[in-house]
Length: 399
Image (cartoon, rainbow, N blue to C red; front, side, top):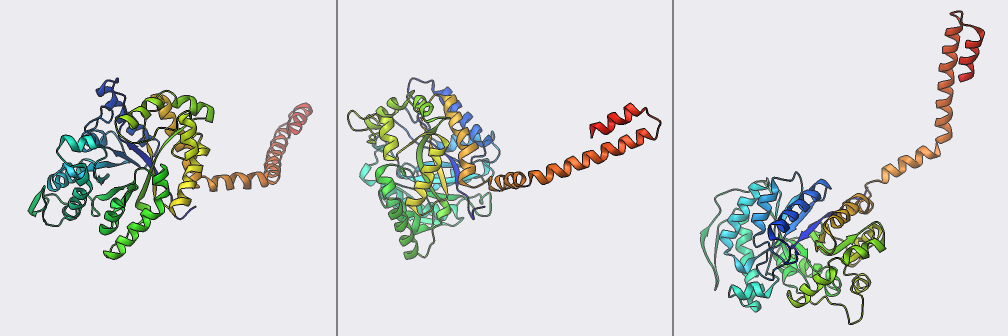
């Protein structure tokens, strides 16, 4: 068995077309989390967004609190809490309460916020969002570490601030910083010894920056007397698998073009393929997405391991490219066939089968001899009880 296994989960922004009833959409997200829990996924991360019409969870804490009691073992992360939009003290207090609601299954993802429209409506200059995130992280680390925080900035002030609840578990809540192409997240993770969430890990820019971002985190950690742990580094990318590549391509045509329209024209994230190029071909060829089989998913994980130098968890970016039941099937195929291969969960089973085949003749011979001996003994006992010669021969013949 490998010395360390990769964990797997889902990153749910979520992405729902505006035509769908919002209550049904939220219910379906909760059902998906329950399904992931049944399939033994390790983690699920829930986004925070406030505009655009698609990503309709404004409070990951509310969603996590609602679904936590419907699951058994899966861990939950805020993916991510947008720090420029919250006073650090009240946010830390809500996270501490949620730690109790989840019975210690909570992780705290932080970032600057991904939609400029969210920042605009709250009067937060987009250019200042990352600066505000950096200003908020230190008091949050102190507060969630059961320390007193004194801090002031242009947009918040904390005076002898401390939380009234101790952590649910002795180790407290894991904190992860969102990181993409910009070095901001990696620097913050290293400075405070936090985990890292590489949200665009499979985009061309994000993929190319994986190794350099980790190097930035390690350098910042050394400069601040901290350490960073690759097992707490999470990479995120879109995936849809089916039993065949043709079936996977057929499935994603259900919603892929509509999703691309939203990402390019509303969310301002440039993902459109070049003119005249099939978006499915483009996503596969650039490595941005897995649209194929469990084997293709395994190949993507191996590709990311080679590029990054090693990471601890992969999160499937949930996207609703396919119909709901096909999406559930995709997660099931990954859990059933891909994850066991990646983590070598069945190596001892294959070895056991191989050993049995190699010794088939020996064991078959021993079993045949044992049955023959029992039948002969039975025939002899019947013979001693004055059975007819025909009956005796019948029992002997059975051997």
